[in-house]
Length: 130
Image (cartoon, rainbow, N blue to C red):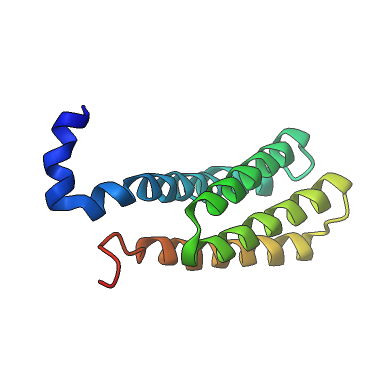
């Protein structure tokens, strides 16, 4: 495998060097998409379910881990999103969320998702300085 990548590395070294980070960012985006498409709608449908809140918490942990590995401009907004998910899950689990709060927080999470997704989509995979 290394012998096959060596010629590519000479010509496209920056792409290969950045491949692990690109894969991490891709995994981060998949986690965010799962939260956006599955976890938040399930939590909206049944806010009292401990399974739904546990799912939100585990997804928030995964997002935070991927954000720390990705670094760069993605790290700070992704960690803030994960912390917001933890806060929402805590309030749901504790039964402290009323209907107005739920609507507001889930709306804010959706907005944060779109901002973060835009940041990820604009992620520069080119060589440094491009």
